[in-house]
Amino acid sequence: MSPKPVPPLPPSPDFGDKPRTSYWSLVLVGIALLLCMTLLTFLTLGLFGPVILLGFVVFVVIGLQYLLWGWLFERVYRQGRDQSDD
Image (cartoon, rainbow, N blue to C red; front, side, top):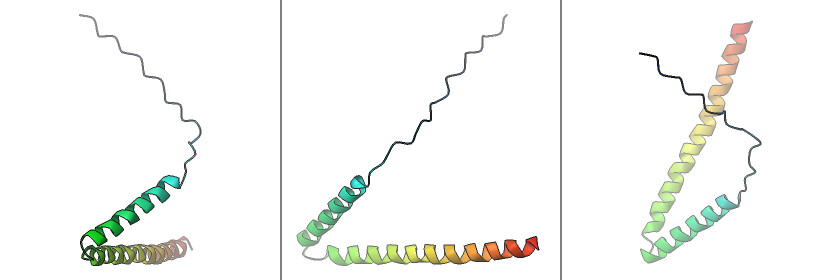
């Protein structure tokens, strides 16, 4: 028995320049989301508004925690690393 031939390797991908992106897609999604939330608030006679507000508050608190603790822990980590180098 002869060993099976090894197939050739596929060509490596061409990683050229990164395509330019646009923020218009994010703007359009934001506008569509705002319109959907407004429509749902009107259709549910205002009962969906507090749900939206609660969700927004939760995400703001999460974002502030992320920024605060990320900034604080980065300073503590860098300060500890600088002291250990001395």
